Length: 66
Image: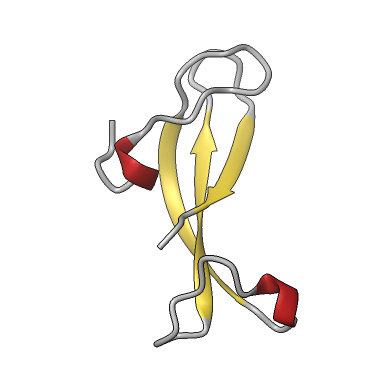
């Protein structure tokens, strides 16, 4: 498991329930006031983790809380 995932907790596949692999982090910049959750004030952005399931091939993502 990659220690950079949110709180060190693995993501569970929404399709088959297997533990997913963390593949990448994507920086997303906010433009609306309601998108300020999980924002890094230094960059005006939040980070989305991208995961893939080694069992069924599904992909999923979640935002990282600061």
